[in-house]
Length: 303
Ligand code: GDP
Ligand code: CA
Image (cartoon, rainbow, N blue to C red; front, top):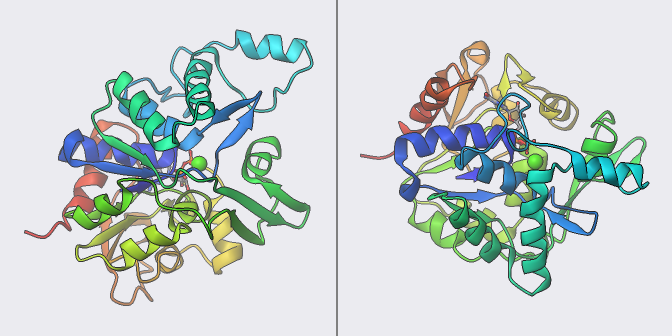
């Protein structure tokens, strides 16, 4: 399964709940990765790790439960870099990861170690171990992903999305094997442009997906044409010309065979071509709803 952060993690939990951790491999986005206070932060990988480890703060919607912010307060008081909120518990993970990366360990290896240490049995692979960064062209200028998303609160409309490093980024070890060996490939209801886009910008991953011999099912991040959270709807309107299932599906042209859409979007299923719609309620607020969406998508598995 290919997934971004928080939105993707909801679906990942549902899938793992049904298919089991050992049967699931998640390929995560690293286009959001950012250096903060000298530390390498991989927000999307961490959202999945925390969700699968049962450590996520479901109410706040990101980061760790029972988080405290004393380090950040000190950083602020000292005039340090504090635009990107890193909690005390979260920082521990970034310290361990950063040290390992500096010692030359690839991101995929560090991620596997972190997952094991957190008791996560699902395989989590970054799309690439190479540097890949998302940039947004907006009327106010060009920004690295986190500056646009966090510092500017994604208020700028997006004219174009670019993936720095994608031309040379190699797929991380295990990703192509996972795609080639899968019974079913899933695209989480993550932002098509800034979460799944960077993964699919890795040429080898896109090619592996295009050459699939098993179905690929995408889950739409929209309900009633609106994003549950974040800028996906605004981006689709501006970059794809609309927010119906057709435009979502078009982001994955040639890469998907079915799309899970919400009941609220079921009246506008025109233009899907040979992509089969699967209609259900797709809002994931608890274990039952996560399982319902996962079941809808997993229903496409060949007998
Ligand atoms: P991020 O990397 O943390 O920003 O998260 P993702 O890109 O993985 O997910 C963000 C997307 O998930 C948004 O476009 C939301 O609309 C979508 N999303 C979040 N929760 C749900 C949900 O319960 N159902 C559906 N269908 N989409 C959701
Ligand atoms: Ca993200």
